[in-house]
Amino acid sequence: MRYEKCEQCRQWAASIALSSGAFLAILKFAVGVTSGSKGCIADSLHSAIIFVMALAIILGRRLAGKEENSKFHYGYGKIEAVVTGSITFLIACGGAVLVWNSVKHLMNAPQYGPPHLSALLMALTSIIANEMLARYLLCVGTQSKTRSILANAWAYRENLISSIIVFVGIIGAELGLGVLDPIAAILVVALITKSCTLIVLDSVKALMDYSVNGTYGKKVRTIVEAVDGVQRIAALRTRQIGHKIWLDLDICVSPGQSIREANHIAQKVREALLNQIADIDKVIVAWSPLEEDRC
Image (cartoon, rainbow, N blue to C red; front, top):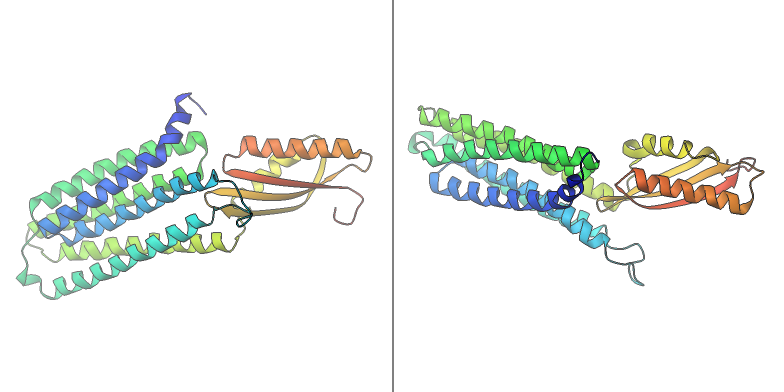
């Protein structure tokens, strides 16, 4: 990390994202209801997704600290995927209801007036807050090399886009184009649907032990091959447990190495991976002499 305070920022990042997401979601929903802005209500659902993502990070960290037991030999990491997927599905259902109401609003546009100006102020506040939070989390995620924090940062940046859409829609409604506010709501729900789909797919993949070799494979191979004594990598298997990665690795060592020396090489590989990739939680390293069939 670049600065000593980066570690402190990393520890607080998920809590800041969680509280900010919850605050913005509640505030936007309240303003949307009182001002009559469908776009503002839709934007509140988008903030709720960020809240869910931050909740998943905190939940994952707490569960990761729980010890395995006789009933759960591999810990509780997958509950994060269950909770995240379930809450995201409920948010998607809320989005569907909002689209239906927005369509009805479009069909009866002459009966509705423009939203109150408080919705415009809320949208502007959301734009500023989302940009500040995105920059903060991008800095923390980049310095700490934490993928989950970076994902939260880009979620805030996407929420910024939805807030801009709402801002434009409300201005249009104030200028006499009343249909722009519900149209903005539909566009925001489209962004929400995209986010929800990706989160639910990630949750399903996590439950099915989907390989993350595509994300971490190249870096893992670079680190392992740099360890003195490793001849080649015979097999690399990864899976995501909560917000952490578990890794099974088969390496090949020289046939002339003693069992003690080979075990020492395997230990050095394990330590190098844990020290250089923050997302890795557990590493199992098996070794074989280079001349064996598995190598």
